[in-house]
Length: 125
Image (cartoon, rainbow, N blue to C red; front, side, top):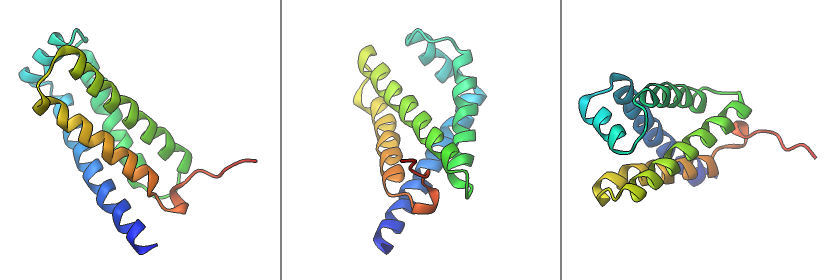
C-alpha cells in the first residue's frame, strides 16, 4: 500500500511539473513552438488551447476531491500526449523530440493507475 502511494506521488509530481511547464511555454507561444506547429500543419492558436487545458488539468489532478474531474483530466492528458507522439512520428521528428511526449504519456498512465481510492470515481453498478 505504501509503495503504491509513493509511486503515485512520484509519477503525479513529475507529470504535473511536465504538464505545467509545457502548458506555460505553450501559452507564451515562443517562436520555436509556433514554427513547429506550422511544420506539423496545426494552427498556432492550438498552443493557447493546449496550454490552458494542461494547466487546468494539473489543478484538477492535484486538488483533493472531484474524482470525475480527475478522470477527465487524465483522459485529456492521455489524448494530448498520444496525439503529440503520433504527430511527431507522422512528421518524421527525431527521437529527441518524441521522447518528452512519450515520457508524459507514461507518467499519465502510471499516475492514473496508482491513484489512491479517494481519487477514483465511484463505480456505478
